[in-house]
Length: 122
Image (tube, rainbow, N blue to C red; front, side, top):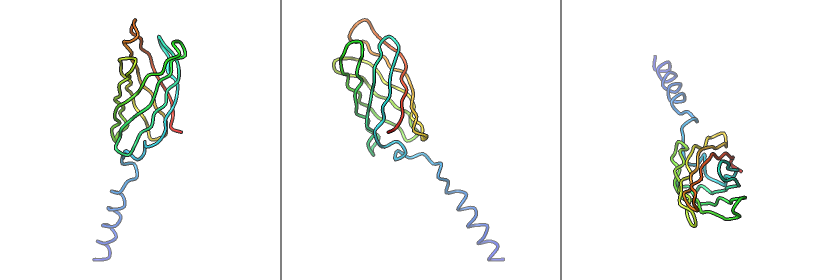
């Protein structure tokens, strides 16, 4: 009886230890891609082990670079700002299958611009 109990206990523990649990380590590294809308260009950023995001957007239209800085949650939700020389947001979702997408806005330089972005982990 004890052996049967231990067998069920071990099976339950193995099932409970799923590798599908989200951790920030699934997203750590370099991500890059493109954006489009009322402006277009490329972007890249690095996610560190604390979830901090730092990178740049480069506008093909204005030939300017914009800083991206923000945070990423353990579930892949990106919440970042676009700053200097712009003022905007860079939000979206990164997935564990190394794909990402979302929306961006930029109120400077005027007129305000917005659109979508997509990319992947390198």
